[in-house]
Image (tube, rainbow, N blue to C red; front, side, top):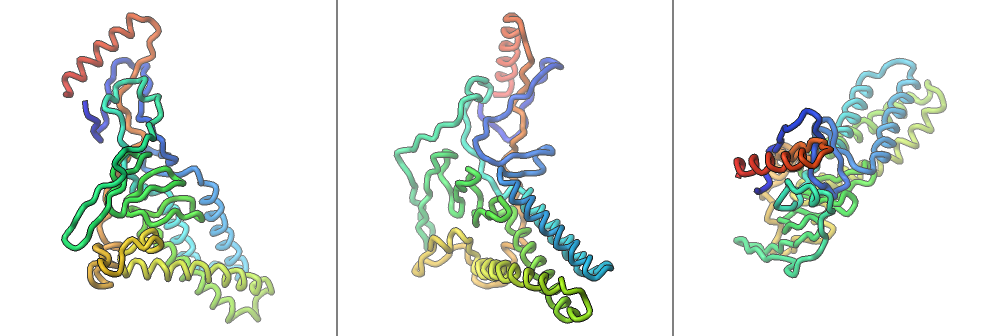
Length: 307
């Protein structure tokens, strides 16, 4: 019986415990797979707390609500949460053929390497080498790369952001880019406003200007770098590794900056491929051996019907 993305659930008893897929990646999910998070959630919480503190301190300097800056702060915080909690585009791993075998579900997946480490695929003007991932046990398509921090292969892998603590891939690159855009706009607006009115406000605004200026230099440089990559329809991983040579060029380049921007920032976001909390079937808690034998008979009947 082959594995399908649909949930396969067998209700035999009311007192049943779910049996789920053995997952070796470091990503976790909650709220019925709607929220993804990693084991580096502390970094995300620190950045989120700093954004809240900065917004509160800025409002306290003026002793009244600054609506434009407050709106930008809320939007940047929202985009940060969306970037972190969204599945970046994790590619499913290859599992066992018999998912109804409880013993095999408890065994970690093998990391033994294949003899053939890559496959050559020739397109019209490009030759692409599909590498084999021994962890996920798949041949990685073009632009798919394995993240060592998350232990997953990610579609259109850009980079693993250590500041946020998650991967930036095909499904969250848009929110990440707009987060940088709104954040830099907010900081620049606050620096300009504080610089103009620093003589009439408390002396603490000078220290805040210096801190915001240093942070803005880093975030603005990151924003400009990703803007350049988007205009070229390139990822950070491809740019640093020089994946596309000067002779062959980038096969994903649409030919113009506007088309590349529309393709990345305004294109359709693909549906996620991984459901960490999908149940394969429900195994009732049985104490007597006779009940276990009855359960096995019921499972075989259902398996024959689904095949």
